[in-house]
Amino acid sequence: MATIDPEAGCTVPAPGDWPVAPQEDVSIEEDRLWIDGCFDFFHHGHAGVMLQSRRFGQELLVGLHNDADIAANKGPTVMTLEERTAAVDACRFSTKVVPHAPYVTSIPWISHYGCKYVTHGDDITSDASGNDCYRFVKKAGRMKIVPRTPGISTTDLVSRMLNSTKVHHINNLIDCMEERESTEGKAGGAENGSQMRARVEEYAASANGKDPEVQVYAYVSQGASFTPVRMGREPDDRKLVYVDGGWDLFHPGHIGFLEQVAKSEPNAYIIAGIHDDVVINRIVGANYPIMNIFERGLCVVQCKYVNSVIFGAPHAPSAAYLENLGKLFGASGKPPTYYHGPTRYMGVPETTELAGARSLGVLRTIDSDAVQFPNFNTGVIVKRILDRKEKYEERQRKKGVKAVGEKAAHDKELLERQAAAEKAKQLLNGA
Image (cartoon, rainbow, N blue to C red; front, side, top):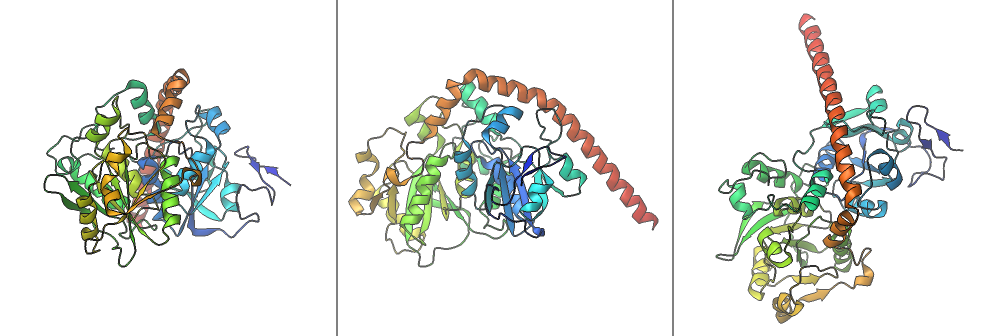
């Protein structure tokens, strides 16, 4: 029989009613972590906190709040629970998604799933009453804090759509990394080019968040060369598969396509090309891409279906480019199989875009009926925002008001932690 958590006030399901297995309580393990949140149109800030959390243990369970709870405590979501679940499940650092997790983190919930600790960024998240959502976990000593990724949030991305700004666009990623181009407002929270490179290296880690995994290159069209950014696991004898796109607001349409490519080519080595901001903006116009190439790249790098990433990939890959990819990955010039997806919003005629792959006989397509979200593209997300502009503007306003209280609570908590650390130091020195 279901009960009520007397602290968090949420329902604690009876066996058979939990959203995902297990249905019976399991033993609590130190290396099984819990993290929860909204994860509304999943971005690299979400992936960053999951990466750091995964380093604490062997398993990372991700609790997702449902749409109604988020609306009651924060405001309307942009993505549905099903869409958010697909995005979190595709993150290489997550091991299980638990939908319908309570907005105020509940000890009976995390204990049922065998998690000793909850992780969260070093900021405060409050409920509708202005109280810390993690107050009961902190009181129980079952909280681990990780640094929050600055400079990116769902709120930031919504603001870009509402304000049609392009100041975040990057002209040349390598120039930014080598500080020949200003990184101000473009680096996704990194302070300089070297930090941008370091962040790419971090996100390219294996599922444990530590070991090298994803290989990352930047393509330089002048000279048709590939500059290494991060070396990782080699393809060895695995079949090479190439996909490309803008990957803007890395969404369920992208993820569904990548998942189907992986299913169509079991054990393949999947290389994902990412187009420059300038290329996307020239084709799509307005203030696209909403995320710059660095932000989009981090989203692709963290995806569990991707083995290598090419920044600055051409929009229409020539036969020579595809053959050079084969040489880069040790396939003796044999070009990778090139998969074309069902969701396209960049209006170049397919005959032009796909001519190189077609001439080599390596073109394959994914049937739109096979993809979980076949008609989902970046424009769908932007339309949702603009169609409900007043509601999202109100959410932004409320977020700003809540942020004042959350910062005050964060500063108070930080001072308390510092005082406790100083007291412990004094006791140690006096011992």
